[in-house]
Image (tube, rainbow, N blue to C red; front, side, top):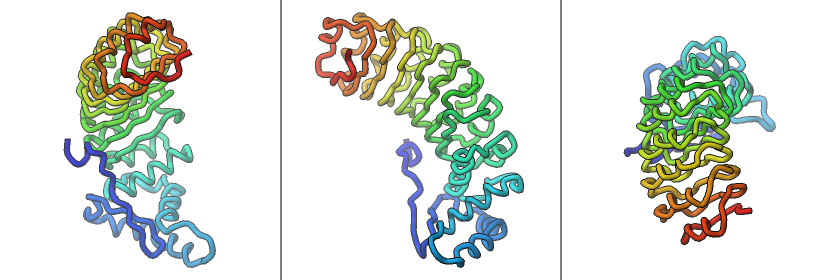
Length: 284
């Protein structure tokens, strides 16, 4: 799957008390000049003050976020710096419709906006523009719909996706994740979109190692679509009261399954007996 698919992150380099990173885009024309002109003098002045102080890079990031309205695009920057700016804006809840546009085509690797207010389908243009660089995505508890999943078709190297509590996604939208076969971790906690029919979309995710379907109340009969996911190691179907002994038969061929969370499901001792060789967790 290549270097990106192996999730090899940019290596961190520390020197002279300044935290920096090496990036494949570091030598991009104009990036160093952009950094100096934007905030270099502010950061250096603060560092000369002495005493306990953040790193030069941290000061730079803070200054950019403070003056975020000044910047129209971060695409000239090395990817690792753009990523840190994005993370800081998300952490401080300073990311909005206007500031998000500056991250168009920045090749971000991680977009973690779980429980972040205001995330909606219109944000997907920027998120999907990260393309094959995007490795991890969390849009939990957001207003995104099926249209958001359509936009992910170009994010072919996406490995981890978390869409918990996304109540506006339907089973019709799930078919758009079929092509994301680099996924190793997928979470859809408490999703009405996950039905037996909708779970057909999971059958092509052959590299999936972790699947979380906790509190998905309509998945009875759908576990059969997991039978080809031989790399699956962890499955969470806690509080899925629709699950019965019959559903356990579909899991018997998943020999790599090490963690199976079944508490508050309608499983009897007979159902458990079908799962020889699997380490069972949280059975009540």
